[in-house]
Length: 378
Image (tube, rainbow, N blue to C red; front, top):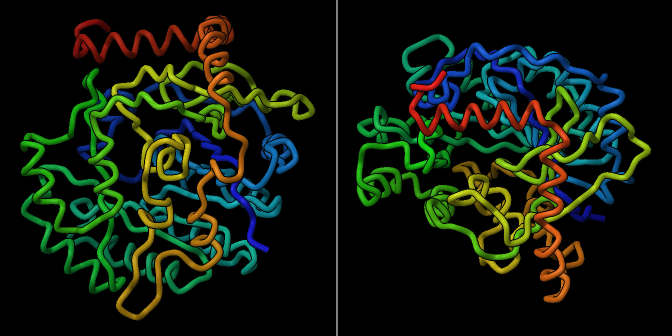
């Protein structure tokens, strides 16, 4: 029987160690390569005890994203293994270059691999003409031939504008399908503008050649202030893996610690009508999975999958079925009166969060001021 997706759990690994220094990386934009290293307060066993299906009210899609390269996080393998053993589906964001770690994942039982998804970033320019380009495509091939699912995704930026045809040829040659394209934003700009010097029309014309449903959805969402009721925080949370602190969504303050006491219920409280961001940064996940039921959007499977020339697909059957669901079909939605009530009490909820982690809120404020002032205030 196919599992129903209950929630999206975003696990953020605040380690900036990486084997690339991509010019478009947000760490460059915010000048944060040398930030103080985070100390991980909790053991993997404690993390897993805190992320059971019982505590999360069902089977979840659990996303693992590091500030740098995810596969370089030292406890990644036992953490992923434990999450899969619990019955969750796990998504790992990676540049696909760390063979020894990929090998260990590909040695997992088939029943685990079937619920493991690699979102592989294709760093075309960083690998071009180098030995690691061959290694990268070999790793992609081995994942493709395994029981794991994957997606190949490229970050469009101006230095690659003349390379689109070569990128297409490489993808067809090695996987038999085009890669997807995401959409870059300038995190050093308070308006989070497109990461390009091109007009929006020209940007879409160039990168539209990849015919990516992911790119289309992200461009449709880019710069559009969301006014619909959002269930992020209710059907999803983001957790800092080092501290256990959790918040409703990106850009929201931490409101609780979910690792400290696994016997204590997690508080799931929706963003509702109070999103403060200029647009939904994580719309390819939140909107596609159904955090905004009033927004008509393709499924997560539709924006991640591709059919290859050999008849295979990026998504294997179990992941494809799981990613094809909308979370709003598996959870109770609020009535109009309940939404009004949530809206009325949200200011009190946000006020409480300000006092939950004063130190981190101060750090975020200083970082925001640096972005607004373009670094003149240190």
